[in-house]
Amino acid sequence: MTLKSKTILVVEDDKDIVFSLHLLLEAKGYTIQSAANGLIALEYLQTHGMPELILLDMKMPIMSGWDFSVEFSANYKKRCPVIVMTAAADAKNRAKDINATGWIEKPFILKDLSDLVEATLQ
Image (cartoon, rainbow, N blue to C red):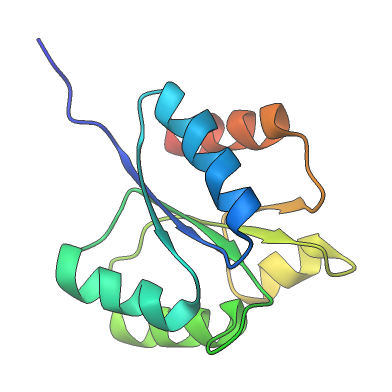
């Protein structure tokens, strides 16, 4: 019996972080999609539907995580959990500001992020 892999949308402009998260999370059996900014993430949602989880950077060009979260909340009644990934001070309050499920401060340890993803998706 095969289970459908859970999809995680990584909204992050740092290519090294995206690459690392692809390797880490695909090895755990997740399907990973990525968007370099919030606008591309919104386009992904329109085309592909809701993933099981969004990992969201807050500072990106074109459309920030804050702007994405405003559009996400306004346009989707049923939303997946969001984990904020930020180097900004006070990550917990940044996450709270956008009603995110969780947060992790950059730079982060990959195992810590992996544990947070697992806990969120259980």
